[in-house]
Length: 346
Image 1 (cartoon, rainbow, N blue to C red):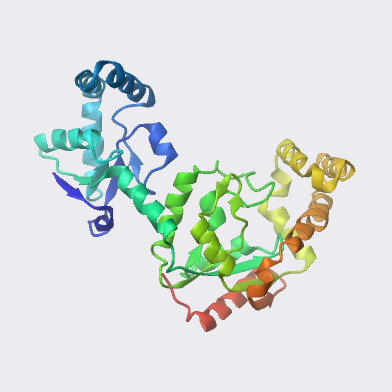
Image 2 (image 1 turned 90 degrees about the vertical axis):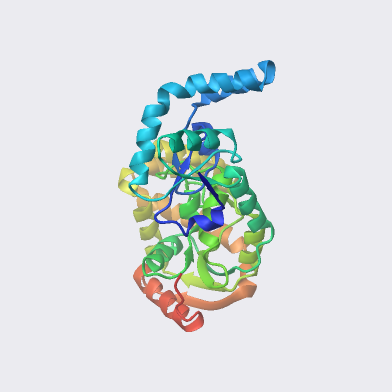
């Protein structure tokens, strides 16, 4: 049985990270890409915790063994399957009893795995430290009114190999009042930070493209150090005709297939900004499936005025890029990037 630091995992052959903590612990946060193979489910972990508190460590260990024993054949078979894919690295909360017991049991039947040094806790400390001391990151920020297609442009450029941090994809939110609709539920704050870390640690020392955001994306917050870097970063301002922005939004939200009631519910949160009469008109447009009118009103009366109020980015504008559609903007941003950043790839 070998222990390994997280920084060394990348040197293994096709490493397979296996998190043996409970499902609840895994959902709250885990190393991105890790698989959950829990030794105990949430209820069992709770029971063991209570036994530990009231009856002591020995009784808690016995309870854990009783819960684990019937599962061992399945767990061993799962580990064998993953070992066919690459080097297996198991971890628990702090590199303690759960990963130790499993590694020892596997060793007894000649199955050898790595244990992550310090477990999940050591990884979390690494993430926290990164964002507390973040310095060597160099974002170039895309700004533009709602519907200009910033996220789509980033996706296009990332597919071409350009260095990109796609915050909205990592946050599973478009950063607007309707930003959660049609997407997977947002991750926890901790897991969002872990996903950010995994991208940013590979972007240190090189410029990369990202999208201008407020510090809050849905229920999540961009870590303070990263957000400060984004506020100080050079800005590329993107412009598209109003009609094209409306078209982009209708396509992005798949207007013909939207759940109208979810949109109506989300509308209520902006009633203080638009007034009840205008919101009622928007609701009527939705119910009558007048999606163009709905989108245009939202764009001109809500999103555009909101965007114009936030003008701090103006002092950092290095380039204004206009186009007739997203494809043209993508091409022009690509050209700008090759001129300024040398077209560096990750």
